[in-house]
Length: 296
Ligand SMILES: Cc1cc2nc3c(=O)[nH]c(=O)nc-3n(C[C@H](O)[C@H](O)[C@H](O)COP(=O)(O)OP(=O)(O)OC[C@H]3O[C@@H](n4cnc5c(N)ncnc54)[C@H](O)[C@@H]3O)c2cc1C
Image (cartoon, rainbow, N blue to C red; front, side):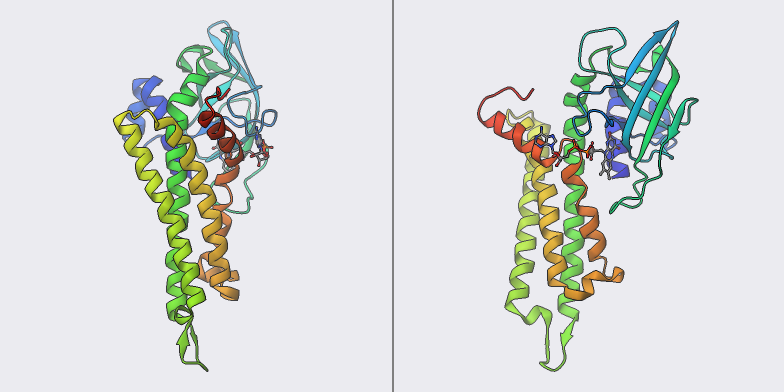
């Protein structure tokens, strides 16, 4: 997820950032991330309540960001706020980290993705140069939808599917290696267990196929590219929850212990469905797209 967020921030910087930052990213000297989610608008990341105010040649930022992956380690944040002056939903900025006025409110202590360092951050009177703006004032929404959403949804789906594959591999290894000695058979000798593993694999591979098709649709500019982008994150996130829940059942009591790695996959799988755009918001968007209604 750290890498997913790095690539999302990088995609915006490649399109609208300065040459020095792009060089630093290429040289592996710059860790990027997104600072979109806020305490006020929660998972509706497209509607920031935080502000950007012009002060001479500087911009003054105030915000209550709720989740920023790599909060303590990022070199800079790709940051959303309300526009400084223009009309529109939002404006994006490149905010160096650390910076006077920026404070981590609480360290990350989540159920899963324990290495994520996704912390809430407060900004009080943070001053950045006006040149730190990414794209035009008021055009943040266009960058979120045109650049960040496809990148994030595809990579977030890839994270979910990596978790699925890890859970399936751990489950198959456990099922083949674990024996009921009194019966002289392994867990994998039980048709019930094999059927669960088959359903895990089927669920994961359906989402893998959708991910491959989404990438193909984006690469060739297919008309259904954005529909696929909406679908793939929801499909993969829900597959990961389903697959890892089944892994917990198949591996039985052993799954509760850390050494198998299944409980970690189960915990890690939960985040994607509530990361914006959440699965339920995506269902709403997909339904609107199918019905020919505007998404916003
Ligand atoms: C591990 C992790 C890392 C994260 N990293 C980042 C990051 O790097 N940068 C960043 O900006 N954010 C990040 N986030 C935040 C994430 O993108 C979401 O903003 C956050 O998870 C939303 O949580 P919430 O409780 O505020 O959601 P809420 O908005 O309170 O949603 C609660 C529930 O209501 C549902 N809901 C909300 N609106 C609708 C609707 N219109 N229709 C149907 N259902 C709806 C949601 O689907 C959800 O189930 C991260 C989150 C996690 C868990």
